[in-house]
Length: 240
Image (cartoon, rainbow, N blue to C red; front, side, top):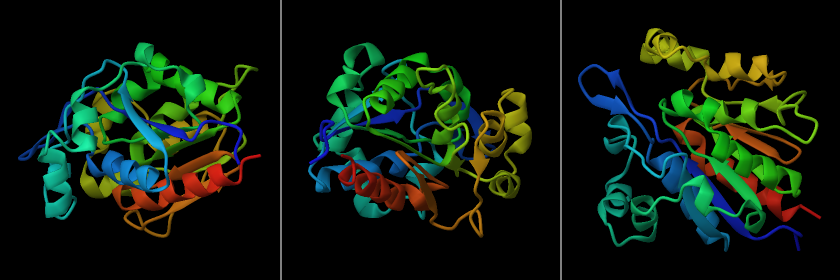
């Protein structure tokens, strides 16, 4: 039985920005939080949701097919569902006692590139869970938080480790690179390299793909949210 609590905390981006010319703005990519939430609950975890400010905006594209199924959209739109009710009452970092969690998962949406690099509260939660011997995981643009998650020596926990996340090729295909530059933020590939990590690319930007390196688990894109969460649970189960 792992020595850390069977409790997961999912980080949610608080940022939003115009990204899609005809379809609105980026924010939380809903299934990148919903899929891990469902995986963790099925595995018997208590799950809480937290953002740096206690607020969020849904990513417009993430609420459209094929990115979300009719059943998933129903869960999101039902304010009485466990997932949506927790989103409606998002915690702030000051509401969270990180010692009560054994697993941290950073969900995403392009907006995570904006607030996660400076999200000191979320980073501190992840750092304490890491220090306590728990799992730190992220999917897609959620990896933007990882360079700022430091160990006791002050070094990023991804330094010298293998990670993955949304690809530069994917950004090019979406036509998002110029917008990201205007935010003055690096892509996941650049941010990972800048923190001393070895970025591992999938065969294709839209493949379901994840990488586990010790207690660090990362995934590439919305299609990877479930497999990344499942890998995080598997990693958790192997903890001493």
